[in-house]
Length: 116
Length: 121
Image (tube, rainbow over all chains, first blue to last red; front, side):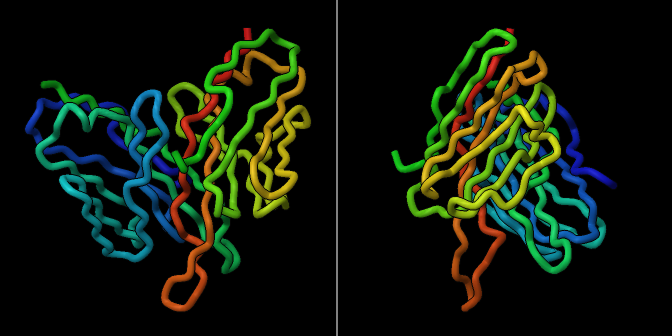
């Protein structure tokens, strides 16, 4: 994996369904992984920052896991609601030469649509 | 509202014109970032400031692009002689180093503004 890749590109689910997305990233020089939710016409909203292998974070119905050795993170949404409809972005920060650089490298995003 | 703000939200311009965007970060944040998102892609890093110093620039930032943060507060991004390929969403984000466990942490989250949508005709 050379870049940050997200799958699927888009997803349509029914209200109440649980769903999950994948973010794959280069495991070398990994420093941190960020998940954002971006609703149309709004600012991207930070969901999670994860740094350690095996990290699990939860915020309401949304949770995320991190595997830095194999280079992937999963985002789960339990009992999807129409207000969960958004683009979900993951981004990594690398640690080259022992220094964490400020820039985020983003995946292309997963567009989630939850139908009532 | 104490979040990151950007102005304007939308800009339509003709090819060859110059445009300038402004970003006001969260007031106590010393780090400021610019990203660009084109259709179907995730945001791509353009440049990064710590206080007033521009510490990193992407190769995406051609000579026609210039960014400033003169007093370490707001920032401007100027595009000269715009081209149709410059059409994109321009996002600004800010962050601050935080003290965690007795050490400064640099993996803190970045807070984004709503973006400026540029259309070059």
